[in-house]
Length: 317
Image 1 (cartoon, rainbow, N blue to C red):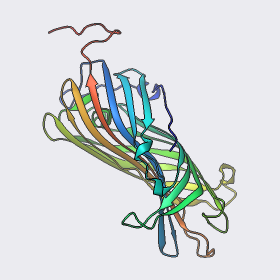
Image 2 (cartoon, rainbow, N blue to C red):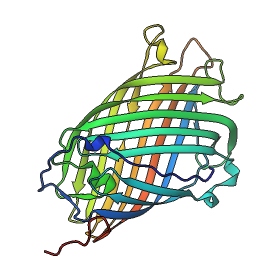
Image 3 (cartoon, one colour):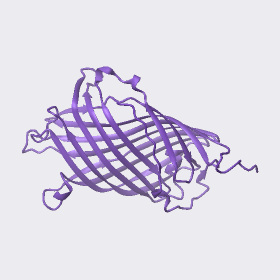
Image 4 (cartoon, rainbow, N blue to C red):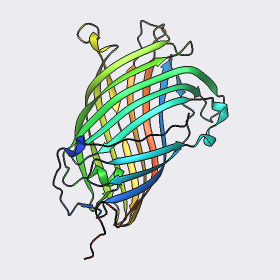
């Protein structure tokens, strides 16, 4: 994976509708400014099943080291990351990748955006041996996903994944929303689907789920959520109403565990979005089940500052 840097401004949309909170369940940290460092691994993988045989195509992408700054309760969240290329396994080939993911957790709404372009994959057995390289295989996915958090006064996604506030008591919430995705898969010869070396897929649909955070004690927490849905799918947007429409399931699990103190926090989180791009066609010997899994694994350390140049020194009680 080629080294790249990202600088992005987040995010006005989730803040347009602020909600009151139950302070017996949720408590924001008093510090306005926090610095963070993190190890992160972003990826997209493909599973293809043909005649009962399953291949998992994985990219050879290392973890990246990132640094960021967050200003609580504002739209600013800047980050800077550097890929740790020395961690690559040279036997697994070379992957060229651009992966831009945003997972933003507002009070009432959560939003996920994906822009992923990968070229170069490998397969291996369960022991990570018998490696086969597919340097010509390229996968592109563009997606947007959003959900409404019903119990937003007592349950906080921010506390679990941003750690800029604390979940004082265990609580959960039902979720409702949906997403839209466009996928392109292609190769010179290594990928075959319906007698073609390419696949195009556009889909959108609705989803629902449930999230829950366990406030284990004053410092520790664990959080998990699962969302399932159904997407309408076709090859092109203009094909809706003209060609056969297919329905595919979707799954979007998230999990986090962390430790909080007033001045600093440590957290581990994992986000995974699974969509299906094709199911086998009995009338075509070269059709197959194809699923794409895009995710982000992160370990973060957050340091909250007592004062900063924007708000001045913190007042003593």
